[in-house]
Length: 374
Image (cartoon, rainbow, N blue to C red):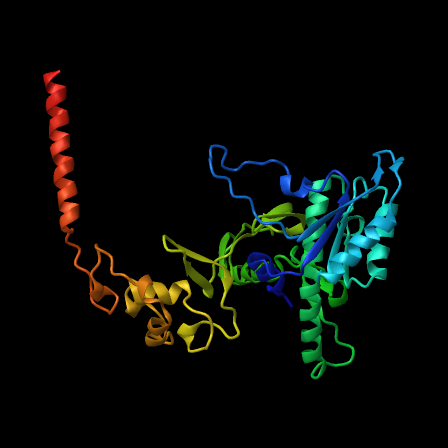
């Protein structure tokens, strides 16, 4: 089976509280990342939030050739771990320099964290034993952040299925790469696109049966929307970014955005913002009759400015209107209020648009006259 539990937790930033243990001097390495600037001329740069809550710089250092330059100080780390556990942190990500090849210090730190009772400990040499600190560290943090939620979900599913499953049946989950793995081996880093990957596999098979070899997939759920492409072979990538989080693990080439049918609509006094939080399936959206969070973008658009006849019958218009703040629903100058109640808009331009049109024509005539005179 496939699941979107990890995808949704990552998009909504609802994973486990995580502590990052990293070599001293590199506490901000993951925040700096690769110094990539997608919008090079942007004056206001908004960086994504880090998944880890706290950073502890460990007094240790191993060189690239394996030489121990600074021995590991376990006593200092023990006190920091105890303080984090007392504050309610239950997940630890261990990322040390050159640990992909020389992992002894990471092993000792992971053993210490488990000894102190942390239920989730992810070490980079186990999660992503590859060169490059940033990619290895990002993947380890993702694994530590999502694995506890995934483990609880799998336990719940297994308990529900055990009642009706044969004794020799095995519960398997789809990984982000499109392959299957046993439930006990399913980890957070492999579950980011578990649900969407199943959609891509199903889309390819459905298209094959229908006689199509080239397909574009649009998979809109309650929390996210996933777009994919198929041209005869499943496209995969090894390094990707989902919801502003970099990770290094094999997965389907899928573009995911945090906007779905149940995404909650926010208004900050100046503009609307959709998501990333979602009303979820339980209790769900107010518009469907559930006593859930509202409003979400679909019923809001319907009640404010769109034709009701184009929306599903099961959406409860009255319930949506009652749960929508009055200041959110304001008729636009261009479309009359009757459109929101089912009437067709009159497409005649408003007085302000007529005035703007006359001003533009006057300026155009003046410009042409000036050009002729010159």
